Image 1: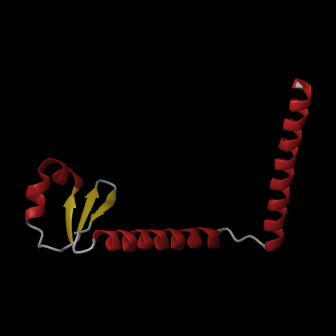
Image 2: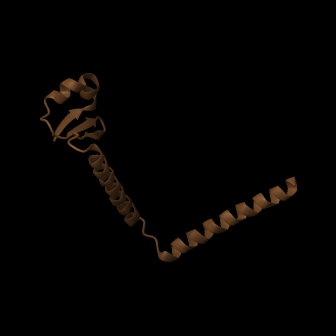
Image 3: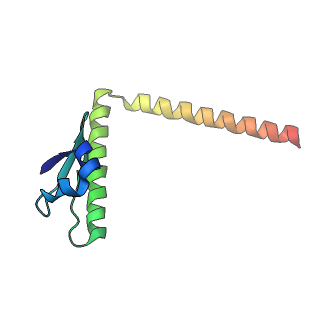
Length: 104
């Protein structure tokens, strides 16, 4: 995998990519580090798009799992959150009904 700076890619995109062998992935990096992957298209684009979206979704799930592990929550705490959200939603619904009665 080749790495190309974002600045170089922005100013000399085609020229910067000429040095990359056909089919090789390129990592675009800025001052804050890696930013984007340029993935070559080969064959069926729709299948590659599906695979890429699946890989992104899996990476997102892994990231969410790591974040969730940092703040463990019990089943009881989850149930309390659900109850509170339902009570809040019910209260908002009652306010709407009261407003409609006043208007009518």
